[in-house]
Length: 91
Image (tube, rainbow, N blue to C red; front, side, top):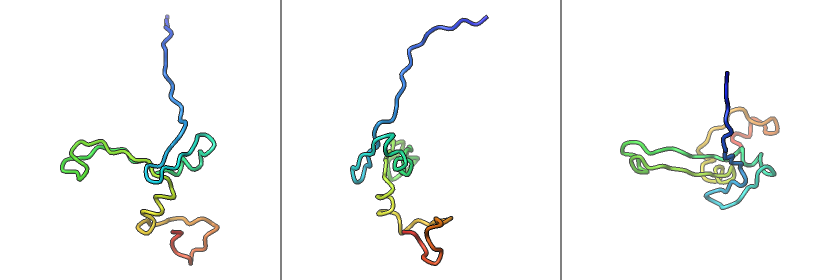
């Protein structure tokens, strides 16, 4: 025999994602494709970390800011069919 009880549950639903660099806000679900392309940073600094030992580091960065800040350092694999291979980097 199994007996169940009712439990009050709290459900959170994503509403807005804001880029921590440019400040642009993206509403969910209208901008879900943009939100999927965010770079989400979430970690704790390790021993002797430049961020601080055990410090919690978080950041949400939109694809445009990632491209602007890191694009020249990133390598692309599997270019889009719309980009010719002889063009090199899409950045």
